[in-house]
Length: 195
Length: 195
Image 1 (tube, rainbow over the protein chains, first blue to last red):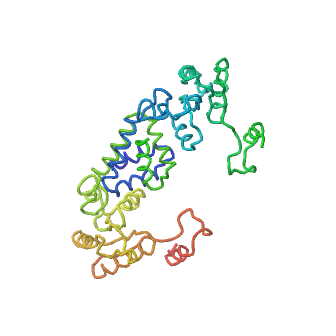
Image 2: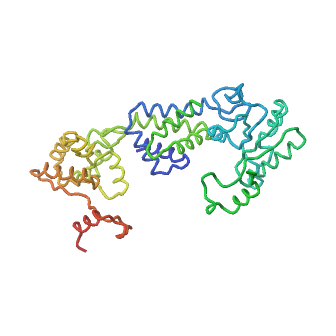
Image 3: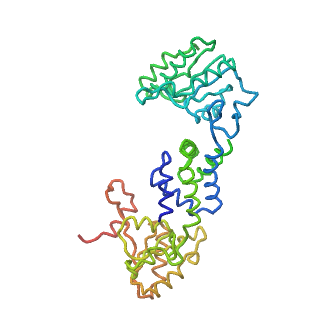
């Protein structure tokens, strides 16, 4: 059936969704009432037409600028620098950070031909100056590309009056020393803190 | 963000999709181009508006009657009786059966208050007579409800000139005796065939 095959093919392009799961999803939609299918279709459409990048920080937003950039309650002297828009939502969910964000839109990766000019670094420089930012917290993933990008940003702001910090790398809370890999363990030793 | 939350909530109502997978799916849609989101939304909408039940056999179809019921190549003297429409697609995928299908729309389950009158059995009786069907292959799941329904159908057609058979229950091909449960093993003994 063409309609069913089309839906299964499209659904299986989503991450973590194989043909089998996509089929089960399509059959669920077929069994469900018309309202659910209509609401799902409409929400997917809305998602792409309503949600866009905040012109200020680059995270996902429905308004211009985003609720975080326009909130009088957020500390404008500290900016958390992340790779991609969804990182903002991940960090927001932790309720640990109350400053602003800046989405780089990627990481420096010479092997993939991605240089610093591909990131939103000039915009970050302008924001740091305009908002008189005191601290940049680099929250890139603890990978080679993430660390390279963090170091690049540190150098870039060397002559600015802004301190550049980086999220701690170490054993996850609730984790087990036994299962921590060598590099994570090395990082957590180097980053050990006074009790 | 309301639009994002809406989509995540709707997606996580699909089977096998938790909040985390739904979020990843929504983010993928956000990152993808507009055409993909549009195609996905439209296919979900089409699925419910184009695909419906075949008035003849009760399986999913885009045409009336379905391609199987209207095919001159299918053997009209044998009907495979299944619980739900997607079972037809599962069996079709095996390319093992070349007769017609009949979807019961459920299984007899006294505990859930589902009696034989809730199933499409009167329609099946009419089809058996009209098409002069020689064999009914019951392909309900090998569960208590599936077996109860199979036995009920056997009794229902006792005075018809139609033989009623049931799919073999046993150890799955490629499976391991060691991991077969006691009941499956008992079934495969009872259903043993001459070599």
